Image (cartoon, rainbow, N blue to C red; front, side, top):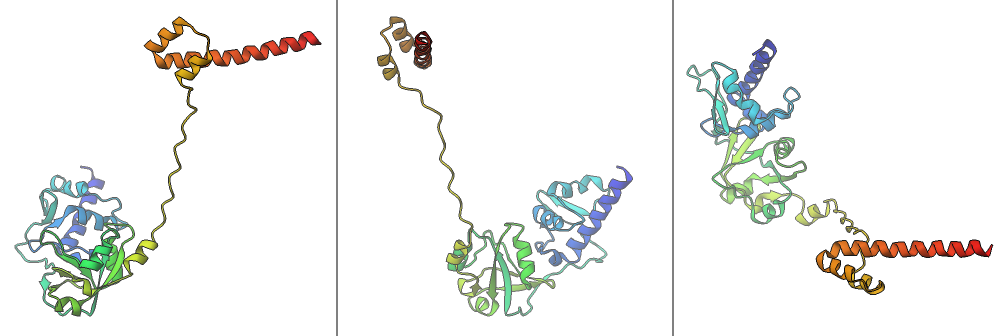
Length: 264
């Protein structure tokens, strides 16, 4: 490994150490209680930084062999910091702090109407990540969809309906579910009306169709060889009859020109 590559790896490692070990909430990330974070989410968050454009999970996983010793553990599609025995890193923990009256969530457009009608029920016991600021909620949602829809979450109503809210760092909260009564945003019908209307695709124009074999055969003099060709290869017969008809038109024009010249 050359010097430039080594320095690049060390810089990336310092950034990951800060994200995973100090302030993942600043990047809109919430690792699980054991510190594991999906590589895909981490790569998308890094790609928003001008210093790491085009970051991918593969480039992150390459640190496992580029650094010796590597300060990270990789498990399939997840990554976490190697446990720190000295306790110098203190990532945020889920805490029961009173939430503000309003939190924000960025919804994808396709399930938006379902969210407004039925609420949000995450699958596989996952957590719903909410943000204190609207911009942070949209930043997280843009990793899934370019134009998400901002939802306001009334925490008082949500908690009264059984939602459990835990703070995570200075910017985020996590929730186990969100009832529809606590969600406020543009009406689904208006949201659908704002979508750009798709232009109908132009109809496919077919090329000029060849006349049927029957019509061509009826317009031509009887020819046993042509009958055999029609039976053996209809497409070739169609092309031959067409050329014969075009040739007859040309002969007729030639004959007319000759008559005209004779008259002169």
